[in-house]
Image 1 (tube, rainbow, N blue to C red):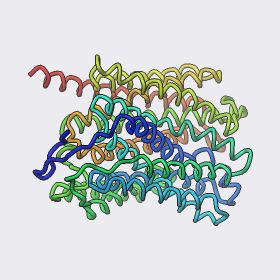
Image 2: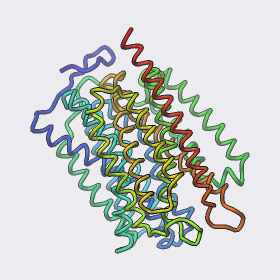
Image 3: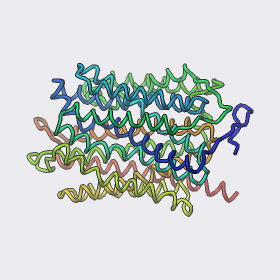
Image 4: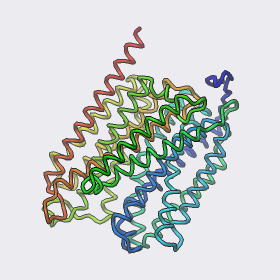
Amino acid sequence: MTGQPVGGVAVKAFPVARSEARLLVPALMFIALVVAAVASLGAPLITSVATSFHVSLGSAQWTLTVALLSGAVATPVLGRLGAGPHRRATILATLAVVVAGSALTVLPLPFAWLLAGRAAQGVGLGLTALMMGVARDHLPEERSAAVIALISVVSIIGAGVGYPLAALLAELGGVRAAYGLGLVVTAAALLTAWRSIPEAPEGRSPHVDVAGAVVLAAALLLVLFLAGERNLWSRHLAVAAGLAVVAVVLLCLWAVIELRSTTPLVDVRAVRHPAVAGANLAMFVGGIGMYLLLTLITRYAQTPHGAGYGFGLTTFVAGLVLIPFSVLGFVAGKLTPRVRTRIADPLLLAGSAVVVGGGFALFAAARSDLAELFAAMGVLGFGVGGFSAAMPGVILAVTPKSETSSAMSFNYVVRSVGYSLGSAIGGLILAAGTGPGHLFPDDSAYTTAALVGIGAMAVTTLTSLALARRRSSETNS
C-alpha cells in the first residue's frame, strides 16, 4: 500500500494486522477521549478552585482557559510533528507531559503550579489529529474513515463524560480528588499508547517551521485571550481593539511565512483549497454556535430560582444535563459513516447545522421545565456529533495521507477559536442583559443569545450547502 508522494519520494504506509487493528481502534478512541475529558476538567471545578485556593472566580476561570490556550498553541506544532517520521515518539512525549501536568494538579502546591499543570494537560488536545493520522495510515481505507469520524466525535463528547465525574469527585473528596481522576486516566492513556501506537510510515519530512510556530502561537494567544477577557472589551475598549489589530497582523505575517517556507507548519496553499477553506469556515462559525448553546444551557440550569427562572442545580446535577449531549453525540457519530454512503459529507454538515439550530429554537421557545433542557441538550449533541463526524471527510477528501495530522490540526485550531468566541459572545450578550445592581441577566437575554445562535447556524448551513454544490458540480464535470 503506497501513500501520497512527499518531496518526490513515495511514502510507504503500513497497515497493521487485523488482530492489531482490533486493539488499535479502541486505543485511539480511548486516548482521544482522555485528552478531551481531562482538558475540560476545569469547567466544573472553577468554584471549588476559587474556594480551595482563596482566589477570585476570574482567576479560577484560568484553570479552564489556560488549558484551551495551550491546546490551541500546541495543536498545529504537534500536527506537523505527527506528519513526520517521529509520530509515535511525539505522541508518547506529549502524553508524558500531560501526565506530569496531571501530577501537578494533584500535589499540594500553590495556585500557580495548578495553572502550570492545567497548561500541560491542555497540550494533550493536540493529539486528536495525530490519532486520525494513525488511523488513516494503518487501517484499511473504508475502516479508517469510520474510525476518524468517531475520533472526531469522541473529542467533542469527552467534555460531557468528564464534567459530571469531576463534579461528583469534587463534592465527595474536594478539588484534589477531582484532579486525581485526570492523573489516573492520563497515566492509563500513556500506557495504552506505549503498547498500541505503531511507528509512522517511512519517507516523511521531520522538519518543523519554528518561526511559523512562534508567530502562530503569539497570534492564537492574543485571539483566545481577547475571547476570554470580556471585561477588557467593556472597560478598556481601545486596548482590546489594539490587541485585536496586533493579532490580525500576526496572522497575516504567519500566512506569509508559511507560503515562503519549504516545510510549512500548515500547508496554507492546501488550506486555500475551496473545499478545505469552506470546511474551516463552517467549523469556525458552527463552533461559535455550538459552544454558545452549550454555555447557555449549563448556565441556565445552575441559575438559582431567585433570579425568576433557572433551576439552581448543583455542579454535579448540572453535569448530568450533559449526558444527553454525550450519548446522542456518540449515536450520531456511529450513524454518520453509514449515512455518508448515500449522502455527501457537505450535505451532512448542512443537516447537522440545521439540527443544532433546532436545539437553539427549542431552548428559545421552551425552557421552563428541566426535561426541556435535557431535550435541547440532546438535540445539540446529535447535531454536534453528526457535524464532527462529517467534517474530516470534507477535508481529507482533498488532503494527502501524509498531511492528515497537519490538516486536521488546523481545523481543530479553528474549532478552538470558534468555541472560545462562542463562549465570549454568550457572556457578552448575557452581561448586556443584566440590569444595574442585578447578579443575573434577564430571562430575555437567553432568548436573544439563542436567536444569535440560530443566525450562526444558518450561516454554517449555507456555507455547507455551497460546499455541496461545488462538489456536485466537480463530480458531474
